[in-house]
Length: 354
Image (cartoon, rainbow, N blue to C red):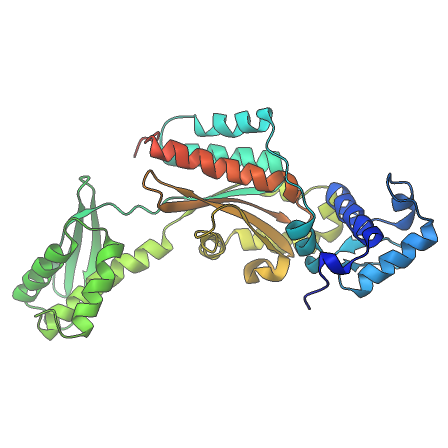
């Protein structure tokens, strides 16, 4: 169901719809006709207001959780509000200062991101989450060193002097010449490039029979690439702070939803997938409830914005996760400001490295 457009709503229906959504976001509770009748700008009787509320409910924009309990916006209604009615407010000077203080902590990038995530959480009353930049240093070589029967040490050396080792199980009776051929091939292809830049071409060469490798060496190269791909997918890529903020007074009446959300926040790889969907956005993207499969059960929302390095390349995503009644008008510009501040600091090389 897509619901009506704003142009299909009468002026009074649009005004009442806006007041219901704003009231729900502010209180976390359904908004009734008596409350609306007392609101400024609604020159209608409670009976007339109830009639409009029913129209909005029939249109799929509002829902009534209980008889005579008032109305609250559906996910379709929230999307209409966010896209067509909401007016964002720039972060206040105090909010900007709190975010910038977090990023100015000095030390490692991880420490600064944790502080910024905590600041976002405190300001939004949600969980602040930041995707840590993927470490993709330029490489010098990848070599295989035999360490015993059926095993080798895969050694990856970066231009920045970093060295990473992985133990690799070898297929069958792998000859020393096979290890040498695979090492030389990988070093020629990887030198001066990131692993991500080289992997697609290497695999294409091997699968297309253009690598001049024998079958044993080609298989070893594939295993060597795979061990880093698997490892990278399992690395922690998120900084999450403020889960306790999700346990506010309004949430206590729906503790099962909050429990589900806290369980979802434990899945770092899944959340990284959610945030990754915002990597190509120019500014903040908003995912409401079931618009994202991960948070469809808990009925939660995600506001996320990408941040970039000095060359304009996206290196991470910053966001807020919380209930669908997040104050979108306030949180969206805060998330965007944090992303812009991170981009600026990265561009100035304002972080030290471990």
